[in-house]
Image 1 (cartoon, helix red, strand yellow):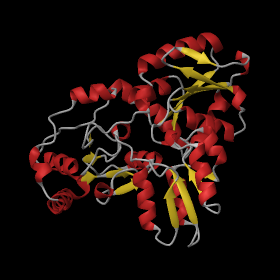
Image 2 (image 1 turned 60 degrees about the vertical axis):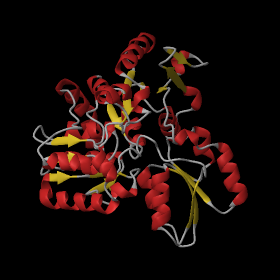
Image 3 (image 1 turned 180 degrees about the vertical axis):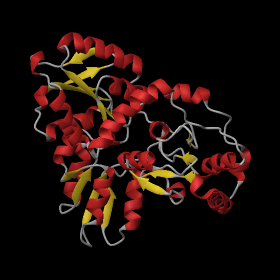
Image 4 (image 1 turned 45 degrees about the vertical axis):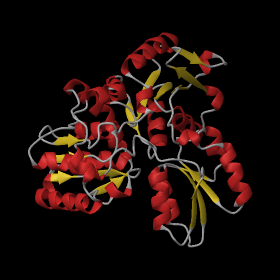
Length: 368
């Protein structure tokens, strides 16, 4: 389901009463309901969520950690996912049929995930297999729809996260001669480059023009990158790095691998959200950092490390708009509905899609 479908199918908008509640009233209601439901309720929260929401998360982490926790959790009857749509889909796929998964605001999607739909992917696969035969294994970043994960699972592939992408790409090359990496070209390119694949061995599939963008010999292609990207991380630029180097010559630059190749190449370090958090946490007092990732996380890191100089690599960066959708009013609305026995904002993945998507997820989890 793409974002337009989500907007069309969402239930009634947030009732006015929640907009009129004070922060203190909203926070008290969350505490009351959490106390009442106990272990029946589980609230996972992604690192990029607002502080007002993340304070109530039972577990925080990146996509891999939250996927693993969702698979392991057997006690919760209700999983209220503070993240985006594809993350809640993963939770629904990995939890039992008796467990219910909710997304407090159905507008919380991912523009990257929407850059690859199942129709484009099947069309691309048909053309690519005509070109390369049975030599391609598909991998998809977890930032993708359940349908794309299902497609990948059906064709023997797996999901990846920014934490385990190198391991999963190496695994893919043990299976097939080539791989198709969906939907983020930058993570795919940076990962393949890190394990020794040359940039001249990577082609780009353009789902809009339905063609392969490559200027070399077709038989030399090893990695086919889907032409998608993260709208946040793509906004970190070489110029940002130049400005930091000039203004703070001793400052370390650390970025997420969803950034462009040239930005990653000029940075001191690159890695997943957990990698960034751990690197700064383990650095000495007085160290200085420019961080190239989502602003909610950067601001939280700044607050947690007052003994260090930390800035955003791009001073004009805004938080991810869709990741930023979930707020206290929507969280309380969702929790009160559960308390009353309602089930609006449920995330339910079709069984056939879920079966193949689970294959892709499990292949990743077994290697993680």
